[in-house]
Image: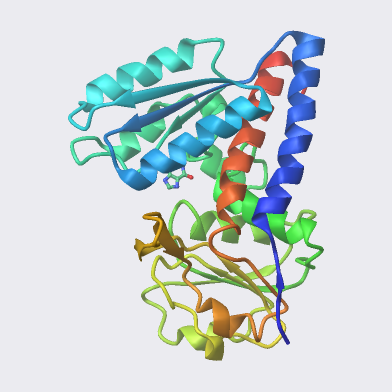
Amino acid sequence: MTAKLISGTEVARQIREELTGETARLKERCGVVPGLVTILVGKNPASMSYVAGKQKTAKEIGFHSVQENLPEETTEGELLALIERCNRDEKIHGILVQLPLPRQIDETKVLYAIDPKKDVDGFHPVNVGKMVIGQADYLPCTPAGIQQLLVRSGVKIDGAEVVVVGRSNIVGKPIANILLQKQPGANATVTICHTGTRDMALHTRRADILIVAAGRPNAVTADMVKPGAVVIDVGVNRIGTTPEGKAKLVGDVDFEAVRQKASFITPVPGGVGPMTITMLMANTLKAAQIAAGVR
Ligand code: GUN
């Protein structure tokens, strides 16, 4: 069996088209333009590229989009003051602080400082808590994107054995929580594997849906995958450069071998990546709709 590719690029394009229409309607009916601020501290190349992508997409959809670039040596106080200004700015509905932050800044303090109503990343503890009890306004973007990829590809999640590799706060823990809710597009039996798991393959081989966010190439090889499984590769590993001087990306899954065994698989790049940005836009539109009282 050769797996069908789940194209995040294509699903993201569809959702962005929907968002562009809804954004125009919100502007027409309520005179409200969704506003997104992206805050980047320092010059981490991966972060710069992510933030540029978020800004570009926001503009394409028709948002008011503001980029704040702060120097590497920015103090925690300066960043908190900027967040406070954005919390009060009525033109801004979504605030995104790109992670990771430089060492002198306490990430937890920063995430707590963002008004939960403008927390379109879904990282504020209030929003994390609402997600866990199944009452989320804003789901974190990468996990929300994974759920959309599965749903829009017709994968049956209800009753499925889902195995997640990785327990980060950004991907592993939230995707596990989202897919176990007693809700449409969820209701799975979920297992999380991590660096303390004794026999990872024992778990991954049982997965109908295997979600890999381990943070290293070849974390999942073909012998760890059940024939016919759906494999979602969340990894983004930069391994050298292409002849054109671009970063060469691979995921966390041994793609060529696993695609011979799986029924569906996401490529890297072009799988989960484009969905993360798209769901950030969906959250920002939702924040603007809530602020306008139409949602
Ligand atoms: N760094 C890596 N992924 C993310 C994300 O989804 N949001 C933010 N703010 N920073 C990130």
